[in-house]
Image (cartoon, rainbow, N blue to C red; front, side):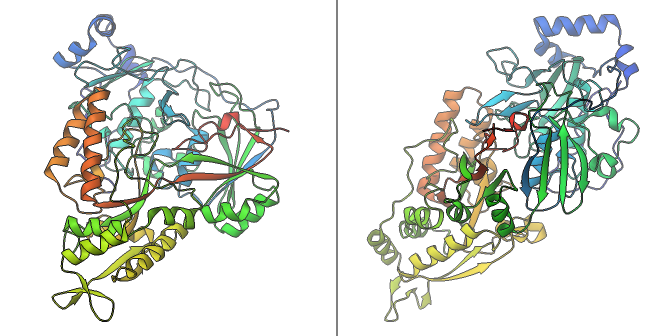
Length: 585
């Protein structure tokens, strides 16, 4: 037996630790089969009459399935439909889903793999490999919120014919928390104290402390999607980072990889063993197309069936007769971060004055064609915690002028504002890779110059933008005055990383003890009404303090061939239901 399955050291996002190679993942077949009948009886009884107390009071053993179903995967016969092609902006660095580093890699991962829980187009959790979403009402969450039970489907097979069992979930958790693996984020997984498999199709997770976002984080999207990995593939070679699996993955998803033509395309075929039934399209092709002009041409000629498009690209394609546009909300915002760590933006009055000088509706209309509506919150509108009544300071140039004057920043004969002989000169940092980011900086600079503020635009690559402070990341090291930022949340409204004093993604360097206290309560309260009230108050404070001037609640726009059916993107994935895609009249 493994004994207690606990994480190693807590790891912060994107920080590697040195250390010895992790022990072999998973439990052997013998380990569960050797478990005494007495222990099985007591665990089964605990599931029925008080597993929560059992876990709290005694040591728990982890078991894997006694046997896998025999057989090998074959693809005889014809699947329905014809090939469907979409594009990626760059070649994947590998195909292991928990090592994914980009949205492109997560999109193709969803073709090949599944999570315990998925999210529908309305942003709601729905079952995937689990038969239901754990709640207190259905008894799958303990009264104190520390224990969560997942009931797995018993009809899921890996693409090599093996059955998916609880041991695969346990293996995946260990792979995520292994400090030797380059996983983007372990947030939530590092709170797991014990993880057990009372039978092959039940997984019980115990947290070190109550954490309300757990169900919306573990083995679903969270900070980063974490699909389930096949434990048996790594039984003899636990080195996840250097496994051939990363180039030739085996998943449970609707499509399996046929061929990866590096730098050109990836070809997938329908998985006849898929638990939801054979996918409707026989073949899916992901073409590597880094050039947006090429992408637009291939859409117009019908060589691509769908593609994510920027607002400017969408406007250029609106008259293409063969295309229609499908939209999905972005789970986050685009906006301006003010550096609250130092002058001049450590003064909330100046942050509010600058916000009043920015015409956010004009930005939405002129830059995005209103595809990115104005927002006043860091939470997406589909979130149950979003408060539509919260408002940032409204656009009011006259009020902005009065506020700036009151702060001593008065116009001089040259038209520029200055105080004590020092001009109000600001650096607005943005990243050149984003058309919306660059144009937003240009428009905002123009608006602020009209108020007598000298604004210089500086362009820094996205990679340099979001790095940790220890690696010279511009945002987290506070080397800017204003910066265009894009932040994406998970399914849960937890925004503590963004707005608490020690938040890992606190780009603004904002610190308010009241917000910290409210966030702490929101993370431990399981009652939805209580959490909604807490997040309402947090949104009100943030709207007053304006560490971020929220600009946009973006909508993803997908250009789709009129003959493509079943394409229904969610806020988190356009490929979540690829098994339904097909071509029709």
